[in-house]
Length: 118
Image 1: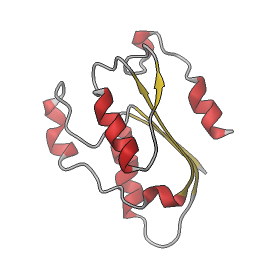
Image 2: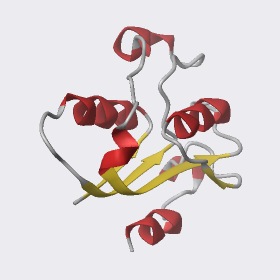
Image 3: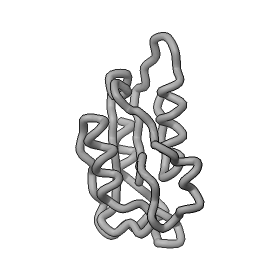
Image 4: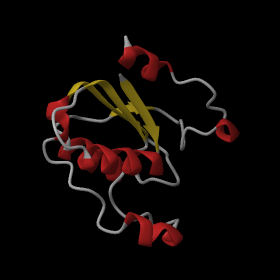
C-alpha cells in the first residue's frame, strides 16, 4: 500500500501512522508540501497544528519515502518541508516554480509522485 498526502493532509497522515500499534509497513509514502510547524499565513490552523507530530521512527516502516516541495510555495515555507524531510531522514525533492501545487497555479500533474510509486 502507498499513501500520498498534500499540505495539511501530510500532518494528518503522519499523526495517523504514529497512532498505529503493532507491525505495519507502507510501500511508499509521498508527502507534498508537508510540514509539522505552524504556518505564518494561516494562523487559523494553529490549534490543529499544535506541536506537530513526533515522526521518530516512522520512516523505518516505509519502503520508499519521498518528500516534495516547491521553491516558491507561498503557503508552506520551503524551510518547513525541509525540516520535515530532515526529521524523517531524507531530503526534499524540489520542483521549481510549482507554488503550493494547486491547479489554480497551473499544476495539474506531478510526475515526481508517479515516479515515486514505481
